[in-house]
Length: 190
Ligand SMILES: C=C(O[C@@H]1C=C(C(=O)O)C=C[C@H]1O)C(=O)O
Image (cartoon, rainbow, N blue to C red; front, top):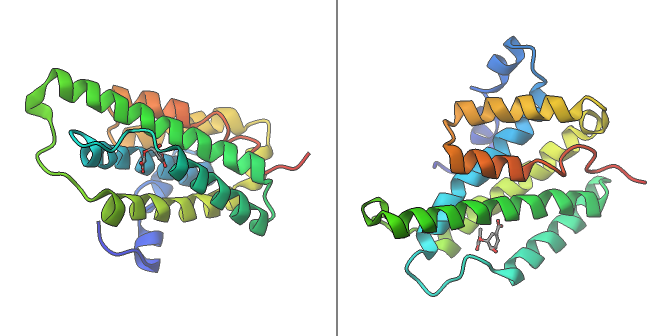
């Protein structure tokens, strides 16, 4: 997927934003759901990296490091650390939901098993880490929008749009639903 850089970062949401705006959707929450969808699509690579190896789906130490890291960075952005950690906790659970679903699919249908094994440490986790940075920025940018009473329905609409543009299947759609519950109101104090 190309190198990370300003061009990539600004170009990525481009197909979503103008179209979402044309439909009267709040582009700000679309920027969040776009990243949640991208993170869920990376779960396919995580699963492919682990399937048929000794590496378990659950890595509690990596999860704890991620949550500690985002708590600290949230505080640096002036966001509420626990609320931001809750968002990432949901992302981790949603990611494992996809991994488990793919394992079940691949167990049942060997022909669908991945033919290549991506490098978890060198390729996949760095891609997840880049999304972490982007998602923290998106949570910061949407702090006000996420505090509004309209956040829930607007988030659901934005999520539907992201699901559509990424052609998410039933498994990833279910996972996207699992990724959403902490987004509205996250980052608020008190
Ligand atoms: C994605 C992975 O699988 C699981 C999900 C994680 C996540 O969503 O960040 C982190 C650790 C694992 O429990 C991974 O091992 O990197």
